[in-house]
Image (cartoon, helix red, strand yellow):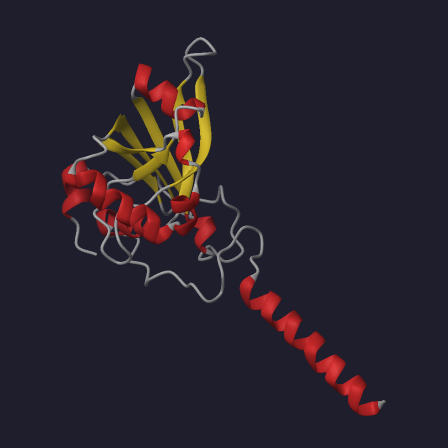
Length: 206
């Protein structure tokens, strides 16, 4: 009985340990998937690229065609490239059955917001605290020709970061979209948004 009890407790402890390692706390990622080293806050463009490349989802905002032009925010997955090789341009895998894609095809003005909180690197700071970085990329959300080389590269990047996407129903006709960035708003410390041009952002060294 003692041996059986010991084995039972050992198995139970293993399950708790596995759950701790694989679970997330307050929306934070897995402990086994830590983000790359964070750049200095003063290096605005590299910091912005880091925040985008390390993230996997955000809120994509479009102009609602159904609700009289009201802003419509939607949680979406994205990728800006292969791991540690991101180019800074967000790609999305969307279906017209969802309002985001159908809105963009009528009015492609859009913005995409990401929070550092989801990376688990904000410590105890609230997501709205300026020390917990946030970035909004503003521009045009455009569908890419599905047979183009760019679409193939984008699908590889998306499916690498989000393997489940490969199993999504073909009948939903998911297509690749990208955000052509025109303006950038980022706060990563006190004192207001950091000035970053699109060229500085895209050319920043990771």
